Amino acid sequence: VTIDAEKTILIPNFLPDQFSYGSYKKKIGKPVKILVLANIEHRKNIPATLKALKRVGEDQEIRVSLYGTLYELTEWKIIEPLLDDHMVYKGSAERNEIAGIIDQHDLLVLCAREETFGIAYAEALLRKRPVVYGHNAGIASYISAGISGEIVHDTNSIEEISDAIRRCISRYDSYDYSEADQFKASVVMPQWEALYRL
Image (cartoon, rainbow, N blue to C red; front, side, top):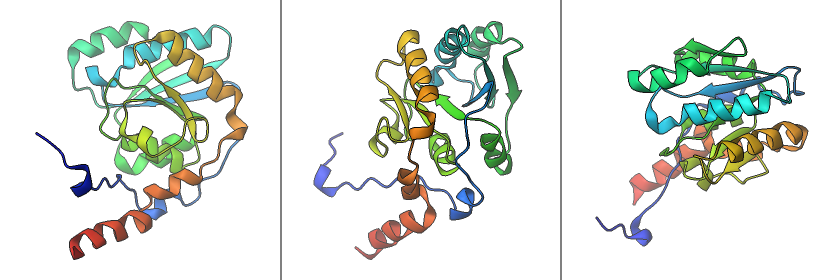
């Protein structure tokens, strides 16, 4: 299949503008509360992310909450032994609970092997939380590394993931969430409407 770039328009996922209402830029906590929000499946790369978080936990006080629907039992068998008192699987989350869950955490870490877009990134950014994300995630086309979070180029590298998490923690107060506005319905819907007028 050949895609003609001149005839292709890429429009991001979006969330209702209300999703960002009441959001606030918070000071990083002690311990640092880290959210991993992803379905339990191979492409989400959760084992590497948890191993990297364990490495970060060797020199920083962190607490990790993993939320996601269990899709692949074989992946769960790899993840379960990595969990402990500081890394807890909370189960799946209902859509109407996501904003509150994000607000309870300091940052989102999701370094998937492949991700078409990853609505969790937009959700975190709209709630003014930085993200650690893989270069191959669709969100990488919309946000700038070092502005709204930290990028990981080799999502198989536990060292690179842990370094990005440490950078995110150390630069926490410097992030700017203005890029998140592009994921609001009030910004995206006019683009959709314009397409239908073509």
